[in-house]
Image (cartoon, rainbow, N blue to C red):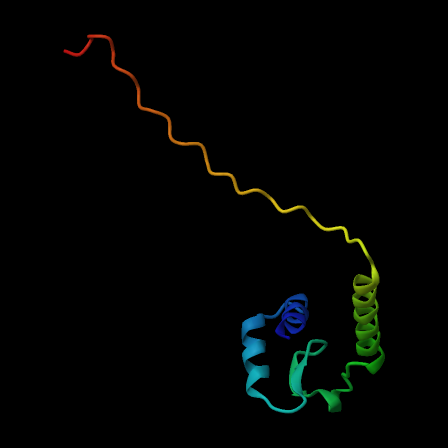
Length: 100
């Protein structure tokens, strides 16, 4: 759940860790207003998550889940084979009697 806030704070040019910690310490509708850099009650700021956005996301997810259940075939990425690496080569051979 912190990923959207982290992205908003980064786009606002602030340090995400500082803002995330301060928001986590708050309770209720406490949050960060990236437009002016203030912390406070998000409802008082007028920053709300519209119900339509959440409802649409849930409807789309349910629609895709329904398609996956009723479809008799799916397209997926083929699993990759984890083949072992090549063994190390032998060292250099002898120098043919050239050791002094």
